[in-house]
Every structure is written in C-alpha cells, then in structure tokens.
Length: 376
View 1 (cartoon, rainbow, N blue to C red):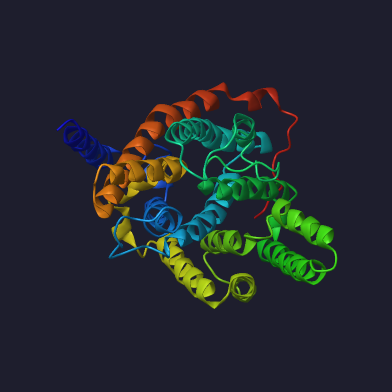
View 2: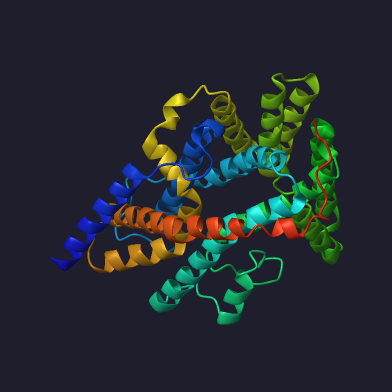
C-alpha cells in the first residue's frame, strides 16, 4: 500500500508540474517555442532508448518487451543540431566574450554538479553493476571534460556534454575572431578538416597507433566528430536571419550530409536528414502544433531530464523488477520519476543558480574582454 501511494503521489506531481510549468527563460516573443518542444522530445527519445533497448542489453528484462525505441539515441543528434542553431543566436545577442562564457557556465554547471552528485550517490548505494566510479573519478567529472582527463563518466549520458562544451569554446573563439562574417566558408573549412583528420586517422592507426590516438584527440578538441550536426543548425540560423538560402549554403548542407554518410553510414545519414528537415520546418514556424504547453514545458526540463535519467532510472527499474513489477510498468514509473526529479532540479537548482550567478554580472569588472567582431 505504501509503495502504491508513493507512485500515485509521484504521478500526480509529475503531471501537475508539466501542466503548470511555463517557459522560464526569455519571453515567448523572443523564442521559437517549437525548438523548446523539439528539445523536450529529443530528451524523451533518449530516455526511452535507455529504458528499453539499452537497459535490455545491459541487464535484461524478466520478459521480452513488445515494443522498444532502438532509434531513440538519435535524439542526441537533434540536440547537436539545436545547439548549432541556438549558439549563434546567443552569441549575436551577447556584448562580450566573458558574458557569453559566464552565461554558459551559469546555465550548464550548477545543474550538472547537482545531478552528478545525486547520480553518484544513487549508483553507489544501489551498487549498479558496471556503472560505479571512485570518488576521485567523480571529482574529475565535475570538470565536464572527464573523458579528456581519462576518467569514466558518472553517467554514460554525460559523454555528449563534453562534446557540447568543447563546441561552445570553439565557436566562441571563431565568432569573436570574425569567422562568421562568412559562415558558409567557415563551416566548409571545418567540415574539410573533419574529413581530412578522419581519413588520416584511418590510414595511420594500424601502423602508428600513437598517431591515430593523437588525431582522435585533435578531432575531439576541434569538435570535428560532430561538426556536421552542429553545422546544420548554424547554417539554418544564418539562412533564417538572412531570409534566403544561397547556392553556397545548399552546397555546404549537402557536404554536411555527405560527411555524416562517410562517418556513420547510410542509415544514420537518412535519419539525420529527416531530423534536419524537421528542424528546418520548426525554425520557419511550420510546426506550430509543437508549441503546446506540455511539450514546451518538457523542453524546459530537458537538460535536467537528460542529466538524471539514465543511471538513476536503471537503478529504479532494477528495484521495481525485484518487487515483481512488470517491465512496462517499471519503465513508465522510471520515466515519470525522472521527469518529476528533473522538474525539481530545474526549479530548485537550474533556475535559481542561473538567476543568482547572472545577477553577479562579473563582466562589469572585465571591461578589457573583447567585444565581438561584426558577423553580419
């Protein structure tokens, strides 16, 4: 009875939070609500992939699942496209490099630290096999670039955060050096570098493993592995701002798709092309049905949902199965619990930390930081 009552409370709170939550960052007139909705749907797709296909691979269910979401991991590809679009929008509205960097820090790190600490505690207490890390490794995770430092992730989903963070650093440098005065040329050069490093790595890896490893590090630090996805979003933003699509932009779009095809194969290229088409429709307000309150609210908690869902969800599903709960009820319970936990972290940590840190406005003490070059 106590367990049943707990789940009733959790379900009620999750539905209530999503129904009542409103966008909490700049006003809707300054936002494309369809992008918030896509972010929420991408996060939900990743959650369902982990709770169905990936959990079954790692731990197995007591009975076979009638339905799974093996394609849900492509939600991360959509995240990267969205990041490429939004990052240029943010940069063009920022008056200095420091303000942009401080804004990214206040947006990303407090919620990440809280989620990482909570995940570390849950995994340690539940003894989730194959997912435990030492205290020292956990401390390295606080950097968000733990893979570069040779440490495992507290949660496997955190691999994409390092890719996003490095991309932000690279795009900040390029933008403030004026590289986006000619965005299609900048993206084309970036793609060419990605292909060259990938091909060179394949050639030298067999005979000179150290060279292959070095090129892999270069690809990570220069955002070469995922630049085709980030580039799609950046080009969509520039085309939306200019109100037209040039022949050069079309050529670079095709180059992005060809690079994905080269790196990841035909199936991934087709799915990413479909995701790109959905994003294109969204940024031109052709998917207005997505801007309904539940989906926009889900988008608001998408970051914290991504941060807390995987290992905590795995631990919860395992425990529910030990109690005899059927697989799909366990998946539904873990999904609702993760959304509820994400909404709490969003309100109590993410929003409060952003407000407090941004009110500090350290940029006023750093007038010597550069203003952006004009990229118009």
